[in-house]
Each structure stands twice: as structure tokens, then as C-alpha cells.
Length: 210
Ligand code: ADP
Ligand code: MG
Ligand code: MG
Figure: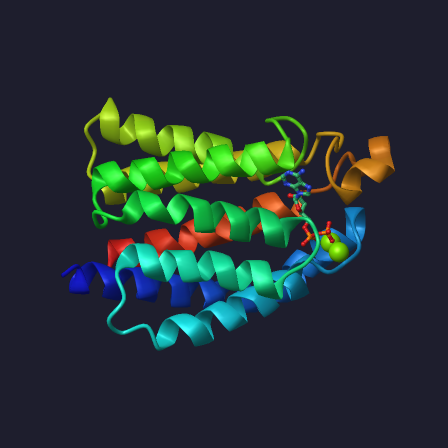
């Protein structure tokens, strides 16, 4: 059951891990401007461990695989972003219990956003990953439920929305996380977590397009 879907999910996760490794220095550079210069290292450590775990999950269902991504990130990554990514992925994974469809992926995206904002308390405009994630999730849902687009096209629109969300973080003053300690001095810098959110979405899209 769900064998093709599981394989596609594992491919997307491995692609995400590769991209994060490629962008490690870039993410750390962004975090050095308004944080503590560890976002690239944190994400690469987490996704490196994720790739090792997921590679061996031949017989697992999509929900189990995605749950493992969350629990692995929780156990490997400290700081602000690790528990937010890991905990939200873990909780949202149950939305994929019936497989990977337009409907279940919308439910996953919404559950992920809801958990992340519940846990982190950030809202749009606080200069965090929420600024990339919120427009991406809303665009994905609307593209499927209102515009009737196939999931891959909806995901492409969501990635565009995430990209605009990342750009939107630049002029903002940070109100959550370490960057908020800098107050107005955070203005003019791109948020690292919003950027890693975009990188992950791009990786999933590129595998989905194939
Ligand atoms: P730390 O700040 O603990 O070193 P990271 O550098 O790995 O952790 O992650 C920093 C990123 O975490 C920020 O760029 C921001 O996007 C995100 N972040 C921090 N606090 C929050 C929060 N409360 N809600 C959502 N995202 C947050
Ligand atoms: Mg940091
Ligand atoms: Mg840190």
C-alpha cells in the first residue's frame, strides 16, 4: 500500500536534505547578520540525520516517514528553528495517514502552519519563517480548492508565494527569536528561517515536477 507515494516522499526528503547541505553556508551567513550564525549548521545537521534515517525506510507509509523526519529533527536540532520544524512536521504527519493526495497535502500544510504558529507564537510581519510559510500554505490551499489546479501547479504557485514572503522579511523589524534582540538593526536583512522554508518547498516542488 502507498508504495509509490512512499518512494516519492522519500525522494523529496532526500532532495531537501541535499539542498540544505548545499545552502548551509548561505543560511549561516544570513543568520550571522541577525542571529548567532548557526542556522545552516543546525539545518544541515538535522537533515543529514533525516536522510540517514529515511533512506532505510523501505516499507514505511508516507505518514510514518514524515513523522520520522519530525522526530529526527527534534532530537538532532536545538535552538528556535529545530523544535519548530521538527514538532510541526511530526504533528502534521498524521494528515498523510490516508496517503498523499491533493486533499491530504492541503491538510498537512494547514496543520503544519497551525502547529508552527501555536508553538512559536509568531505572526506574519514578525520576520520569521512564518512570513514565507503563511502565504505559501494559503496559496496552495486556494490553488487547489478554489482554482482547481493539480497539486504540482498549486505547489509551484506556493513556492512563488514563499519567495515573495522571503523578500518581504527584508524590510521588517524582527519581533520574534534572536533577531528581535537587534530590534531596528534587524531591518534590511533577510530572515534565515523564512529562507530555509523556501529551500525546502523548492526541493519538494522539483521532485514533484519530475
Ligand atoms: P536560533 O535562533 O536558536 O539560533 P536558528 O538559527 O536555527 O535558531 O533559527 C533561526 C530562525 O528561526 C529565524 O530566522 C526565524 O525564522 C525562526 N524563528 C525564531 N523564532 C521563531 C518563532 N517564535 N516563530 C517562528 N519562527 C521563529
Ligand atoms: Mg541561529
Ligand atoms: Mg542558535
